[in-house]
Length: 433
Image (cartoon, rainbow, N blue to C red):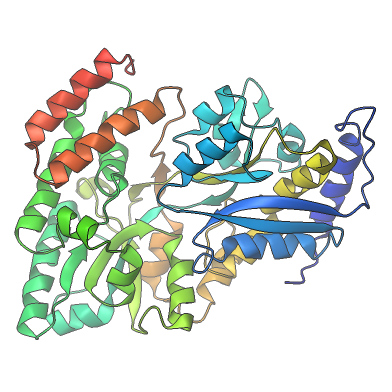
């Protein structure tokens, strides 16, 4: 991927001069010497962003080679934490969300990359990665959760398409109507698919419920979101949590192979869907994007600003990186969070951390991306609230809530029992305010 990136080249040159002494007096850095940087990624066959970023950078840095190291997408953090502890982690690694940032940073597992951060100027998604005036990672993506829908399955079921005004009650009604209508038409598809992640219920509950606070120790705000999910499972309007786990269902196949008419998922899925349509791993059909259903009417409709959630996705540097590679790694971070990389990401359907009108136009000009007004509204108009407020307690609380999620969705505990147990556990372990 050949791209002209003069701004990034200038930043990289400046970083090279600033960081020339990072290797210590006994290890001078030659900015023109061949350098190989290892970079963490996941699902490389269906997630093209890592290769896109690597190719874009190396096109103007011919002395740098970037080798991708693949991790399991579901167990990424667990595997990365283990590799960092063992000293086998790659030179540059991705922070999938903000959940473990405080753990990585406080544990000394992130190099100070303030020089790369300073080259980015004003970038709101940068703030969560800054501690005591220093920057420990840079954002390259800022996804938000939206509603994907299959226009053809809606038409088959004779259900009206989303119009941007839906609350969660509207969503639940549509899921049931779709399931019934598709069944009557001889289809085995369900109205909706809710993936097994806790985010699919808890992310929306935290972002949309007035007064909800992850670290308050009061998890009652989760209740209506789980009641709705359990009701849709019982009605057969979405596969059960047990079925999804036992059969290892993927959200990509459920929506891409037209097994479900609706899917709540992050905007990163645009790139995956486009790629899988090209490879045949997804069918070709008419689809669209709508805002996520809303807590109430006050934020619903195209004259309002819908509320959703999403953490930035960032990159940091392993502090055990060879000193001779630090300059190149910092320059790479400056590139991935910059405007040129943003255009490259939009060119494959990924939402970059720095969004502008030209970048939005680039994404919606792609073959296969819907160009209707509602899809553009859903993509570009929303208030994004964090799924993982940065705190040393966030990871522990989310682990507690993941246990709640599994217990509730599998029907192994009643909702009230699971919430009470989670609240008691969070307080007992000292993870609340």
